[in-house]
Amino acid sequence: MATSQGPSNTNRWEKGFAALAKFHAREGHCLLSSRHVEGKFKLGVWVSSQRYYKDTLSVERKRRLNALEFVWNWRDYLWEQALSLL
Image (tube, one colour):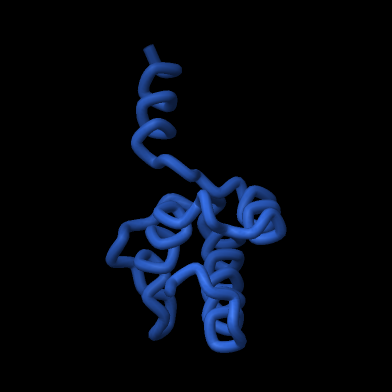
């Protein structure tokens, strides 16, 4: 199950979070294509999974993602950005 927090899932989550933190530090945001790859890590897929499983993520993982200004719903975010330009 994708929401399991066993050792291999925890390692993969930490690898994904580290890649996202590096991307955020470099780009200043967490809005990336679902096809985005950092090194050999499919970061876009990982980010999409976090959004999909947001209701089952631990509070600690959500807190860490929120600290990076993680966008949980990119469509709403883009809508709000466009609306603010009007």
